[in-house]
Amino acid sequence: AVQLVESGGGSVQAGGSLNLSCAASEPLPWYYCMGWFRQAPGKEREGVARTTADGDRLYVDSVKGRFTLSKDKVKNTLFLQMNSLRPEDASMYYCAATPCNQANIKRPETFTLWGQGTQVTVSS
Image (cartoon, rainbow, N blue to C red; front, side, top):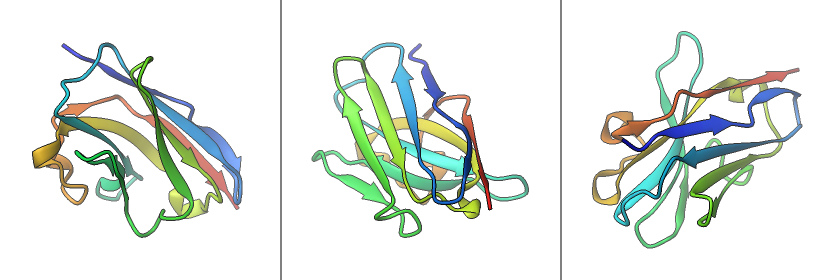
């Protein structure tokens, strides 16, 4: 089965940056979209950003203007560049994939393939 492996997490002070990577072990089906979710202790998993079927990128309001998705098609890797990090961004960040026509950033359950996560800590 295809595996997703996240990397790039770490500790950063408020205002700093991190670049997360999500590497797929093999190319995903052409009809799949990929996204990032995060979950802090004691909180529900929430969507961060995802690709769309037409090649656009969708961000939740809390990260819009600070986080940016990009892709390396050759290496089957999705990136999440995170700038101007805030303490409330601290979470375990998960990469996920699912058929584009069922992807809903507000509903993690719509994503069927998940990585194991990478930890992001932001100190104030």
